[in-house]
Length: 81
Length: 141
Image 1 (cartoon, rainbow over the protein chains, first blue to last red):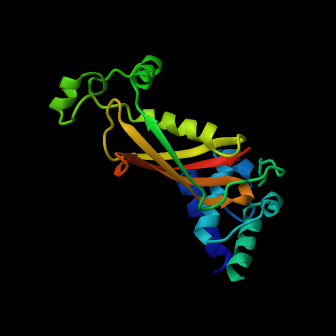
Image 2: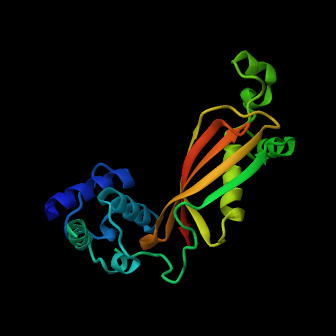
Image 3: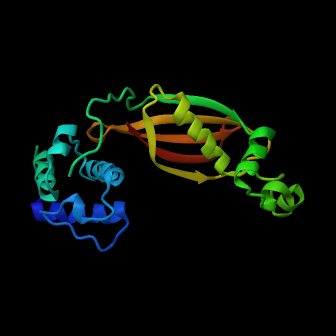
């Protein structure tokens, strides 16, 4: 699965969890750019992403992601391993 | 993309942990619910109306069950540093005054990365009739 494909699936998760069809996430997207992405929804997003891709992050990994793209790279690595 | 979770908190619950509780919808609970929330819909307050609509008697408010869930989360889990993040409930059967309910819950998953526990539950009447089911996501604060 390519990074672009992962970002597309992550985008669908964001739309579903945040209940906003207009969301378009990109590699550089950060939480400040999406109104609904607060601390509570952040948890729901991570849980939905872990479930969807059947992966698990550590707390340290989550804290160190600087944007959506970095998370998608981590997803790609975990899927491959 | 920063998590707001306390990195030092410890999740003591594990996948597969089970909890069984029993609740009774007492006159006090029923009256208290109406007193606090003022839902006096005739389905809940008039046996004649409820029977006319096909029920055995006046139907208890479904959200009384959510009160029992609140008690379970707040008082019966092995830790107190919890907060309900999401909750879903589906109602299958009505409940009536003085019904005895069996509440069964099970930890379905634990998400260490964001310190969240997913719990599924079922309310049963007469130990076997499924009254309501649902899912609760609990954050460890």
